[in-house]
Length: 313
Image 1 (tube, helix red, strand yellow):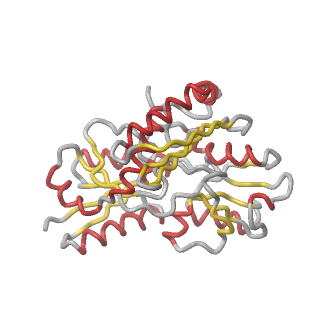
Image 2 (cartoon, rainbow, N blue to C red):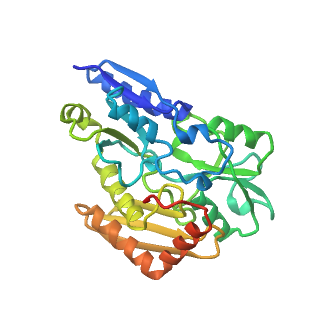
């Protein structure tokens, strides 16, 4: 079996993900090496993600290493991968999905509903901010950057009354002590692809692709393909106020999706069942419906206020 080199960000969670894929590959007889690559998103830590607006901010430098042949594959949180990859790359595998929902973390409060008026909540996600504001317009939402440990430390030091993080990352790192509530999808629709890992390779690298086929999870692939099709139809990157969650229900693929104004004043929700064999069709159809119902106006306003930059030049 050939040696495979994995490109990964250097955060604790990114390295967990890379080591997870490495262990699976080693179990299949491969020798594996991990190269840590620092990305734009890792270097800019004092600005809210939505204000940065750089397309592929967590992937660009890793893709450059992939293109140059320094690494053979890259492991990403799928939600960080743009829906349209740059020319020369492809997704070779989408892994079994961890819980895609968001987690409410707090020292003193058990649920979002229990927070006092004016409570300080940390998140740098416009999607989370919008849905929080929709149900609790009285909350004081503040930017929260840094790795998982940094964010949890800020919570423990009393800088925030609560913070919202992806439950998948917390569970993978075994840092679940401060999770007080796994937020239902009906309250907070997750980001497209949240909880799944995407393994990226050079386009046309058939040999490496074959070695990675066993990592593919059919259910996760169908669900996230549907979610990413919706995100692409809405023209959104990973930092716009769009949520998408697809799952199997009674033999059908069911998609829940939202588009929201960051201040929570307007939130559009759409749900629909579709054919499991045509996940992109379902994502596109729900995206089109949301645009017709006013999603286009919401997103144009978001881009116009400089809160997020469209992924296309």
